[in-house]
Image 1 (cartoon, rainbow, N blue to C red):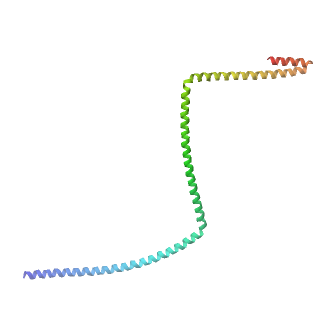
Image 2: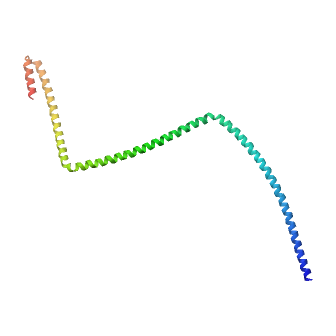
Image 3: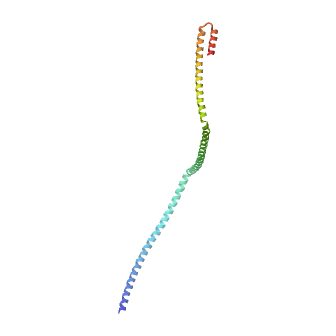
Length: 190
């Protein structure tokens, strides 16, 4: 009797499991059919999109060809300008390199001049007192030269005044020749 009960329980459990499996199979079939419909819809949409993309590519190709035809001269001009710009860029780069080289050379020259100046300074250092005395003597000579120039200018003014006075007196005197000799002698003596 116990065995019959176990068998009945097992059969009822197996039956329940079969019903569950049948239900699951039905659900899976239903879900499979639904997925097949979605897959068909997606395939149709893909074909339509591929067709639209093809048409779009054709339209774009036509439009691009039209634009290229209308802008051919501008494209050629642009290419020429870009090539010139590239050449100018290379020239600028070359000039910058030359400038950098020249700056380095100028710095080297400055350093050389400073080194030479230091050597000159070092050579002058033992003779500094003599150079100072010579500079003072030069200043004194320059002052003397200025004084002589001023004296010469004063003498010239005095001669001019004497000559003017002599001319005035010659006009008023009957013995012009004697007076002139006297004035010239006085001017030479001054």
